[in-house]
Image 1 (cartoon, rainbow over the protein chains, first blue to last red):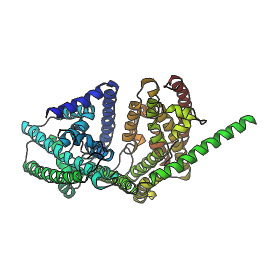
Image 2 (cartoon, rainbow over the protein chains, first blue to last red):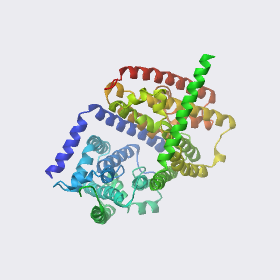
Image 3 (cartoon, one colour):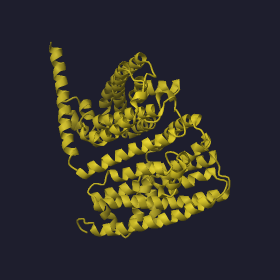
Image 4 (spheres, chains in turn green, cyan):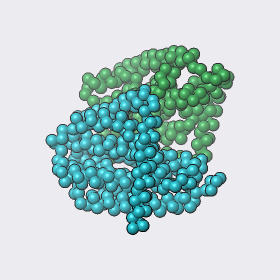
Length: 261
Length: 276
């Protein structure tokens, strides 16, 4: 655990050497939210029957964006770090050291995104301030879903990295998954915009468990049957996806060859 | 006569650089087959999910900033077309300026008997990647758009096309300029990333008419990210008058070319490395 946080801290310190980078990241986030807000205003001037107010929508996008960035579910930085490390042989540096392999590599990639993670954290906080949840149990529910999001994203990243063991150049496959995931998770548009039948199916996917359900807490008065079912489903997804990912990861490591190993 | 010969020689040299760039990049890009297919799938999924996104939004609204669904799809089509043109022609090359300066590799280019800024900007011109990745999504968009519902006349099409080209020239100069801080600061990617972010979020989903006058002024005159996409689309669709749009585009493109050239000279004066 100590080495995990040490690796994150080290990579964060590298970036703190460049304060202009932090300002740049903040400005990019401001730009993103500004244009998003412009688009939301246009849509909500004309939308009929939609149950999200403009303020709620802004909170929704701040929260979903923050979760996506913190968990790396769409950018898959951990996955691409694994992929590059395997291709270049850099993973050998980790294999020969007496450190837990996956958590160390995760710490490095998460640490390299530290500045983005800080901005994402505040993005979620601002979302809470703009549209506070109606009860404490909803915040607890949000935290529970966030933990599920973290592990779902971890497994997706790991599966991306695993592709490198089996394919020469997996390149666009993770991007394809990210594009589809962004829409199906409710990150691009709340699932309430979809036709009811389609929305009900989408809510069962791991992407929706990771992104839509935690953000949708802002629309609820208390946790209901739908949220509890989603939590149980989320746990099942975590077990299935991480189980598969770890199985293929161990299998792939056995196939890995490098000079000296 | 001598001046004319010099200009002819200059143009010939630039055309030779472009020809070599295209051949070299073609060989590089056809090396990995699986990368080709997965990239194509990725862009198709991106466009597909974006189209689905628009369908979902328009299931709840009739228009966005006065744009119907077909007009919005046309905006997306123009935005995507511009994206692949930019990516194929100069985007990747301009990203390398920072590395060239930081590592001192710029010396090797400055010692060559070629116009350095032109060579850097057009060193690799990609034909295969944009065609491979962009053709299918663009064809899908062409099929989905109900062209009969769009008010495009031959005059508006020509004006829109010229606006698009002038906008591309202005945007190229802007991208080049925002890479130059590396000559003074040692790092230069931050302003460029900010421009990319603005461009990315304004390109496909925000019609030109959704911006107020102030923002239109900023994104046309100061940070010209809207000329080749939003403004050009507006001209195509007869939502903006052609003559003022063409005049603005020409003025901005010219101004940014001159600014780029001046800043490039200043940047070279500030450049130093172990061998220079």
